[in-house]
Amino acid sequence: MGHKHWTPREIKYVAEKSLLDSTNAVVNVKQMAKYLKRSPGAVNNQITKLRKEGKLPQIERDKAIDTSYRPYTEDEIKRVKFMFLKDSTVKEIANALDRTESAIQSLIFKLRQKGVIESPKRELWQKHEETYLLNNIQFDEHGYTANTDELANFLDRSVQSVSRKITKLRKSGAITIHADRTKTSVKAKNAHEQFNKRRFAGCERKVPIVVNTPSKVEVVQVVLTITVGANGEEIHQFWTFDGKLLAENKKLTEGNQ
Image (cartoon, rainbow, N blue to C red; front, side, top):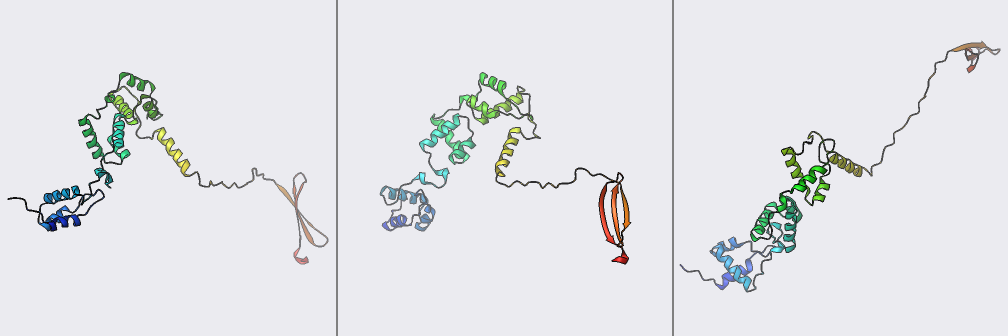
């Protein structure tokens, strides 16, 4: 059975009814195929012809909204190669390029096949690197590594690579100091404290209110004397035993008020 000839009306229908996404890909091929009673493949062939004739725009993958379908630029490929050789993880590369991890894994596989990148030979640690690490590694009071960043910088390796090596050396017994997982590393604790200082730096500090109280209390025995004056008033006087007048109070008696 031969191919069904396309009529001008059908070709015009495809040209006018094609719905394009951000990359100019036609998204309603199945619907048009059903309406025209043709296969999706036949409709796609007609769309290709219309693109060649300039009646439909060409595909532009770099305009894809979903980064998974956006082609890699030369700069992106160079960055992937650089990060991969620097021992960065697939997740780190994916985050840096705003891609999915599966997309980066696929790209690395293709680049390996083409010979653009090779598995990093530096993944195998040299003896002098291991010796340097063992001689210069520092631990905090809880057994956590305190200078991973410095070791990574000196050895020109990623922090992740150095951390993995330290884990292996602990398992092999080359490093006998183990982190106390029930406690937080000093580095993490200090970072948390610094964060809190910056966080609450603008908050007003409350000044405690100090209440003045007597610093010393003495118990003194006194002698009370009561004297009745000529006008009928009573004079109450309080004396110390050594004759010192402490207080005096005058009041009228009931009959003279």
